[in-house]
Image 1 (spheres, rainbow, N blue to C red):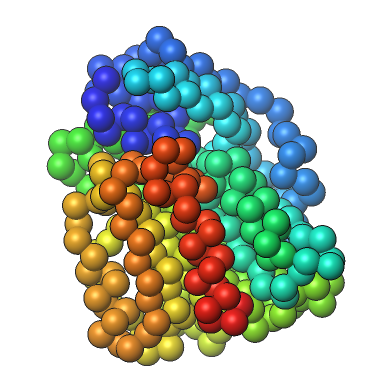
Image 2 (image 1 turned 120 degrees about the vertical axis):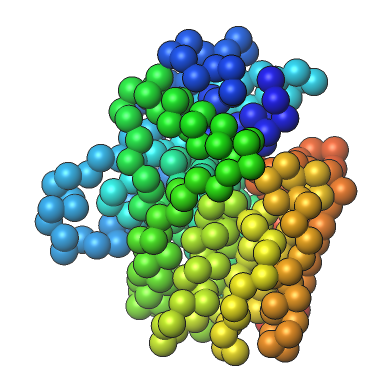
Length: 311
Protein backbone atom coordinates (compact mmCIF):
# COMPACT_ATOMS: atom_id res chain seq x y z
CA UNK A 1 0.00 0.00 0.00
CA UNK A 2 1.57 3.28 -1.09
CA UNK A 3 2.16 6.15 1.33
CA UNK A 4 -0.18 8.54 -0.45
CA UNK A 5 -3.04 6.08 0.13
CA UNK A 6 -2.67 6.52 3.85
CA UNK A 7 -2.83 10.28 3.56
CA UNK A 8 -6.08 10.09 1.62
CA UNK A 9 -7.63 7.71 4.09
CA UNK A 10 -6.62 9.86 7.03
CA UNK A 11 -8.33 12.78 5.37
CA UNK A 12 -11.56 10.81 5.62
CA UNK A 13 -11.88 10.13 1.91
CA UNK A 14 -12.37 6.44 1.30
CA UNK A 15 -10.63 3.37 0.06
CA UNK A 16 -8.17 3.81 -2.76
CA UNK A 17 -4.89 2.43 -4.00
CA UNK A 18 -3.13 2.11 -7.27
CA UNK A 19 -3.61 -1.64 -7.03
CA UNK A 20 -7.15 -1.57 -5.64
CA UNK A 21 -9.38 0.12 -8.20
CA UNK A 22 -11.63 -2.91 -8.54
CA UNK A 23 -14.86 -3.48 -6.62
CA UNK A 24 -13.20 -5.42 -3.82
CA UNK A 25 -12.01 -3.58 -0.74
CA UNK A 26 -8.49 -4.08 0.63
CA UNK A 27 -8.09 -6.17 3.75
CA UNK A 28 -8.45 -4.17 6.94
CA UNK A 29 -10.84 -1.62 5.42
CA UNK A 30 -14.62 -1.66 5.43
CA UNK A 31 -16.91 0.99 4.03
CA UNK A 32 -20.66 1.22 3.70
CA UNK A 33 -23.50 3.60 2.94
CA UNK A 34 -25.75 4.30 5.90
CA UNK A 35 -28.88 6.23 6.73
CA UNK A 36 -28.36 9.85 7.90
CA UNK A 37 -27.04 9.93 11.44
CA UNK A 38 -28.42 12.28 14.07
CA UNK A 39 -25.11 13.11 15.76
CA UNK A 40 -24.72 16.37 13.80
CA UNK A 41 -28.17 17.56 14.81
CA UNK A 42 -30.74 19.35 12.64
CA UNK A 43 -29.40 20.93 9.45
CA UNK A 44 -29.95 24.58 8.64
CA UNK A 45 -30.29 24.72 4.85
CA UNK A 46 -28.37 27.63 3.39
CA UNK A 47 -30.71 28.00 0.42
CA UNK A 48 -34.16 27.21 1.90
CA UNK A 49 -36.01 29.15 -0.82
CA UNK A 50 -34.58 26.95 -3.57
CA UNK A 51 -37.42 24.43 -3.84
CA UNK A 52 -35.65 22.36 -6.49
CA UNK A 53 -32.61 22.01 -4.25
CA UNK A 54 -34.74 20.85 -1.34
CA UNK A 55 -36.65 18.38 -3.49
CA UNK A 56 -33.57 16.91 -5.16
CA UNK A 57 -31.35 16.54 -2.13
CA UNK A 58 -28.83 13.80 -3.05
CA UNK A 59 -26.76 13.78 0.12
CA UNK A 60 -25.38 10.38 1.13
CA UNK A 61 -23.97 9.34 4.47
CA UNK A 62 -21.30 6.70 4.85
CA UNK A 63 -19.18 4.97 7.43
CA UNK A 64 -15.49 4.07 7.13
CA UNK A 65 -13.51 1.71 9.33
CA UNK A 66 -9.87 0.93 8.65
CA UNK A 67 -6.81 -0.68 10.12
CA UNK A 68 -3.46 0.10 8.49
CA UNK A 69 0.07 -1.23 8.93
CA UNK A 70 1.72 0.21 12.01
CA UNK A 71 -1.42 -0.10 14.12
CA UNK A 72 -3.28 3.00 12.93
CA UNK A 73 -7.04 2.59 13.12
CA UNK A 74 -9.89 4.93 12.32
CA UNK A 75 -13.65 4.70 12.41
CA UNK A 76 -15.75 7.65 11.29
CA UNK A 77 -18.80 8.96 9.51
CA UNK A 78 -18.63 11.02 6.35
CA UNK A 79 -20.97 12.66 3.82
CA UNK A 80 -20.83 12.76 0.03
CA UNK A 81 -22.93 14.02 -2.88
CA UNK A 82 -23.84 17.22 -1.04
CA UNK A 83 -26.17 19.25 -3.25
CA UNK A 84 -28.09 21.04 -0.49
CA UNK A 85 -25.43 22.90 1.56
CA UNK A 86 -26.17 23.21 5.26
CA UNK A 87 -24.92 24.29 8.66
CA UNK A 88 -25.03 22.27 11.88
CA UNK A 89 -24.88 24.41 15.03
CA UNK A 90 -22.87 23.41 18.11
CA UNK A 91 -23.23 25.96 20.90
CA UNK A 92 -21.28 26.31 24.17
CA UNK A 93 -22.89 26.58 27.58
CA UNK A 94 -24.23 30.14 27.92
CA UNK A 95 -22.07 30.89 30.98
CA UNK A 96 -18.95 29.98 28.95
CA UNK A 97 -19.83 31.78 25.72
CA UNK A 98 -17.21 34.24 24.46
CA UNK A 99 -19.29 35.58 21.58
CA UNK A 100 -16.90 34.16 18.97
CA UNK A 101 -18.24 31.82 16.27
CA UNK A 102 -16.27 29.52 13.98
CA UNK A 103 -17.65 28.06 10.75
CA UNK A 104 -15.95 24.66 10.42
CA UNK A 105 -15.33 23.32 6.88
CA UNK A 106 -14.27 19.65 6.80
CA UNK A 107 -12.06 18.22 4.07
CA UNK A 108 -12.43 15.28 1.72
CA UNK A 109 -10.98 16.23 -1.69
CA UNK A 110 -14.33 17.71 -2.81
CA UNK A 111 -15.55 14.11 -3.06
CA UNK A 112 -16.71 13.65 0.54
CA UNK A 113 -16.69 15.48 3.86
CA UNK A 114 -15.03 14.19 7.04
CA UNK A 115 -17.83 15.60 9.17
CA UNK A 116 -16.80 13.66 12.25
CA UNK A 117 -13.02 14.05 12.58
CA UNK A 118 -12.84 17.48 10.90
CA UNK A 119 -16.31 18.65 11.88
CA UNK A 120 -18.02 17.51 15.04
CA UNK A 121 -14.76 16.77 16.90
CA UNK A 122 -13.51 20.28 16.11
CA UNK A 123 -16.82 21.83 17.18
CA UNK A 124 -16.73 20.08 20.55
CA UNK A 125 -13.24 21.37 21.33
CA UNK A 126 -14.32 24.90 20.46
CA UNK A 127 -17.46 24.59 22.60
CA UNK A 128 -15.35 23.58 25.60
CA UNK A 129 -13.64 26.99 25.32
CA UNK A 130 -16.91 28.89 24.99
CA UNK A 131 -16.76 29.27 21.21
CA UNK A 132 -19.81 28.60 19.04
CA UNK A 133 -19.21 26.30 16.07
CA UNK A 134 -21.13 25.70 12.85
CA UNK A 135 -20.15 22.65 10.78
CA UNK A 136 -20.54 23.45 7.09
CA UNK A 137 -21.50 20.86 4.48
CA UNK A 138 -20.64 22.49 1.16
CA UNK A 139 -21.29 21.49 -2.44
CA UNK A 140 -19.23 18.51 -3.66
CA UNK A 141 -18.45 16.80 -6.93
CA UNK A 142 -21.00 14.13 -7.79
CA UNK A 143 -19.85 10.55 -7.21
CA UNK A 144 -21.54 7.19 -7.90
CA UNK A 145 -24.01 6.13 -5.25
CA UNK A 146 -22.59 2.62 -5.00
CA UNK A 147 -19.44 2.01 -2.95
CA UNK A 148 -17.33 0.35 -5.70
CA UNK A 149 -18.12 3.18 -8.12
CA UNK A 150 -17.21 5.77 -5.52
CA UNK A 151 -13.97 3.97 -4.69
CA UNK A 152 -12.98 3.97 -8.34
CA UNK A 153 -13.51 7.73 -8.65
CA UNK A 154 -11.41 8.42 -5.54
CA UNK A 155 -8.77 5.97 -6.70
CA UNK A 156 -8.58 7.64 -10.10
CA UNK A 157 -8.14 11.07 -8.52
CA UNK A 158 -5.36 10.04 -6.16
CA UNK A 159 -3.78 7.77 -8.74
CA UNK A 160 -3.42 10.85 -10.93
CA UNK A 161 -1.84 12.77 -8.04
CA UNK A 162 0.57 9.92 -7.46
CA UNK A 163 1.67 10.26 -11.10
CA UNK A 164 2.40 13.95 -10.58
CA UNK A 165 -0.78 15.16 -12.24
CA UNK A 166 -3.16 17.73 -10.76
CA UNK A 167 -6.75 16.62 -11.37
CA UNK A 168 -9.21 19.52 -11.34
CA UNK A 169 -11.55 18.62 -8.49
CA UNK A 170 -12.13 22.10 -7.01
CA UNK A 171 -15.84 23.00 -6.80
CA UNK A 172 -16.37 26.74 -7.55
CA UNK A 173 -19.70 26.72 -5.72
CA UNK A 174 -18.09 25.67 -2.43
CA UNK A 175 -16.67 29.14 -1.53
CA UNK A 176 -20.08 30.63 -2.33
CA UNK A 177 -21.56 28.22 0.21
CA UNK A 178 -18.98 29.33 2.77
CA UNK A 179 -19.91 32.99 2.19
CA UNK A 180 -23.60 32.11 2.48
CA UNK A 181 -22.82 30.44 5.80
CA UNK A 182 -20.93 33.53 6.97
CA UNK A 183 -23.88 35.75 6.11
CA UNK A 184 -26.33 33.40 7.82
CA UNK A 185 -24.43 33.27 11.11
CA UNK A 186 -23.98 37.05 11.15
CA UNK A 187 -27.64 37.66 10.38
CA UNK A 188 -28.73 35.27 13.15
CA UNK A 189 -26.03 36.24 15.63
CA UNK A 190 -28.45 37.26 18.36
CA UNK A 191 -30.29 33.95 18.21
CA UNK A 192 -27.03 32.06 18.64
CA UNK A 193 -25.53 34.39 21.24
CA UNK A 194 -22.56 35.42 19.11
CA UNK A 195 -21.01 38.73 18.11
CA UNK A 196 -21.45 39.31 14.34
CA UNK A 197 -18.00 40.94 14.29
CA UNK A 198 -16.41 37.76 15.66
CA UNK A 199 -17.43 35.21 13.04
CA UNK A 200 -14.71 33.44 11.08
CA UNK A 201 -13.62 30.18 9.44
CA UNK A 202 -11.51 27.15 10.12
CA UNK A 203 -11.07 24.79 7.18
CA UNK A 204 -9.26 21.49 6.75
CA UNK A 205 -7.66 20.37 3.45
CA UNK A 206 -10.37 20.88 0.81
CA UNK A 207 -12.25 22.84 3.48
CA UNK A 208 -9.15 25.03 3.86
CA UNK A 209 -9.18 25.68 0.11
CA UNK A 210 -12.90 26.48 0.28
CA UNK A 211 -12.63 28.94 3.17
CA UNK A 212 -9.47 30.52 1.76
CA UNK A 213 -11.23 31.22 -1.53
CA UNK A 214 -14.20 32.69 0.35
CA UNK A 215 -11.92 34.83 2.52
CA UNK A 216 -10.14 36.49 -0.42
CA UNK A 217 -13.12 36.72 -2.78
CA UNK A 218 -14.32 40.09 -3.99
CA UNK A 219 -16.94 40.52 -1.31
CA UNK A 220 -18.26 43.33 0.85
CA UNK A 221 -17.83 41.19 3.94
CA UNK A 222 -14.80 39.29 5.15
CA UNK A 223 -14.64 36.74 7.96
CA UNK A 224 -13.06 38.03 11.15
CA UNK A 225 -10.33 35.37 10.88
CA UNK A 226 -9.25 32.31 8.93
CA UNK A 227 -7.93 29.03 10.31
CA UNK A 228 -6.12 27.37 7.40
CA UNK A 229 -5.33 23.76 8.32
CA UNK A 230 -3.23 21.57 5.99
CA UNK A 231 -4.23 23.34 2.81
CA UNK A 232 -1.87 24.02 -0.15
CA UNK A 233 0.93 26.34 0.92
CA UNK A 234 1.67 28.06 -2.40
CA UNK A 235 1.48 31.87 -2.57
CA UNK A 236 -1.72 33.55 -3.76
CA UNK A 237 -2.85 37.11 -4.47
CA UNK A 238 -4.02 38.52 -1.16
CA UNK A 239 -6.37 41.51 -0.93
CA UNK A 240 -5.38 44.29 1.43
CA UNK A 241 -8.37 43.64 3.69
CA UNK A 242 -7.93 39.86 3.97
CA UNK A 243 -8.54 38.49 7.48
CA UNK A 244 -5.80 37.46 9.92
CA UNK A 245 -4.76 33.87 9.25
CA UNK A 246 -3.68 30.97 11.45
CA UNK A 247 -2.00 28.29 9.32
CA UNK A 248 -0.99 24.79 10.39
CA UNK A 249 0.29 21.62 8.73
CA UNK A 250 2.61 18.71 9.36
CA UNK A 251 5.95 18.67 7.55
CA UNK A 252 5.49 14.96 6.76
CA UNK A 253 2.22 15.76 4.96
CA UNK A 254 2.45 13.80 1.73
CA UNK A 255 0.26 16.28 -0.15
CA UNK A 256 1.43 19.73 0.94
CA UNK A 257 4.31 19.27 3.38
CA UNK A 258 7.11 20.09 0.92
CA UNK A 259 5.62 23.13 -0.81
CA UNK A 260 7.32 25.75 1.34
CA UNK A 261 5.26 28.51 2.96
CA UNK A 262 4.49 30.91 0.14
CA UNK A 263 0.99 31.62 1.41
CA UNK A 264 2.41 32.87 4.70
CA UNK A 265 4.79 35.17 2.85
CA UNK A 266 1.87 36.49 0.79
CA UNK A 267 0.06 37.49 3.99
CA UNK A 268 3.22 39.06 5.40
CA UNK A 269 3.81 41.05 2.21
CA UNK A 270 0.45 42.76 2.73
CA UNK A 271 1.14 43.43 6.40
CA UNK A 272 -1.76 41.23 7.52
CA UNK A 273 -1.37 39.24 10.75
CA UNK A 274 -0.45 35.60 10.12
CA UNK A 275 0.76 32.76 12.33
CA UNK A 276 2.25 29.46 11.14
CA UNK A 277 2.59 26.14 12.97
CA UNK A 278 4.61 23.54 11.08
CA UNK A 279 4.71 20.26 13.00
CA UNK A 280 7.46 17.69 12.54
CA UNK A 281 4.93 14.86 12.28
CA UNK A 282 1.19 14.48 11.93
CA UNK A 283 0.71 13.62 8.26
CA UNK A 284 -2.28 14.82 6.27
CA UNK A 285 -5.69 14.79 7.90
CA UNK A 286 -4.65 15.01 11.55
CA UNK A 287 -7.91 16.74 12.48
CA UNK A 288 -7.82 17.97 16.07
CA UNK A 289 -4.33 16.42 16.36
CA UNK A 290 -2.53 13.13 15.82
CA UNK A 291 -1.83 11.49 19.22
CA UNK A 292 1.86 11.24 19.99
CA UNK A 293 2.79 14.25 17.85
CA UNK A 294 2.91 17.99 18.53
CA UNK A 295 0.00 18.42 16.10
CA UNK A 296 -2.12 17.42 19.09
CA UNK A 297 -1.64 20.99 20.33
CA UNK A 298 -3.11 22.61 17.22
CA UNK A 299 -6.60 23.39 18.52
CA UNK A 300 -5.30 24.88 21.77
CA UNK A 301 -2.88 27.01 19.74
CA UNK A 302 -5.64 28.16 17.41
CA UNK A 303 -7.86 29.11 20.35
CA UNK A 304 -4.97 30.94 22.04
CA UNK A 305 -4.32 32.79 18.77
CA UNK A 306 -7.97 33.87 18.65
CA UNK A 307 -7.61 35.26 22.17
CA UNK A 308 -4.59 37.36 21.14
CA UNK A 309 -6.86 38.99 18.56
CA UNK A 310 -9.55 39.51 21.22
CA UNK A 311 -11.77 36.93 19.55
